[in-house]
Length: 284
Image (cartoon, rainbow, N blue to C red):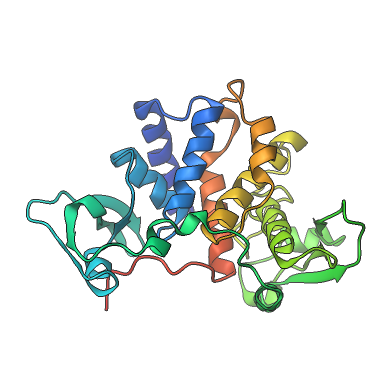
């Protein structure tokens, strides 16, 4: 079922990219990442779908969320926007311009601009969540220039042949620099998890990671840093990705060089495994 869903999503994404003629240059790809950051109440792939339907969208939510969270109602004749939703073909959401009522709180409308809110306590919560998934985290006192890295176990054959059952969880090790503050540690953690979920370490059935280990190092780093850029900004941490992406993402980079579907999916998987984002609701 997951494989079929991924195939449908990938086909839809390819068609939208081709027909919209968007994101063909590096600067437009960077603009896409920034837009994905601006709507953290939706999974990254759905933010992309919203942008295709209505470029310039400021904020969107379900009819239920507009009423319960923001005390706003849908105006007569408003045109809904479509997103994909589990156990249903699509769900309907509405742009703020198609609602009326109380003003949208500034911390919601501009949440993606906040920076530096990570704490050591939250890092410890993430560590506990990841251990349950077979991903161990160690805080090591490295020199300041080394942030950390992820390591796949030596006994690779067992991991590659594992089933999707919890009894055969993989065992990965991510090392983080103990000397860095929580914001840097979080960015490093997300970057290394991105390598895992992007398939740079090989396939993993339990964690639903593809096998993309054949990618060249520059592409791997750019993809991982793009995911880091999305997840960090959507969760109020500003990493060094801005400079990194500016150096790599330019007019010579074509979107065809990047697997946008896998990138957006990995960002969503990381947010899910760390329990980071409370997405739009459709049921009480």
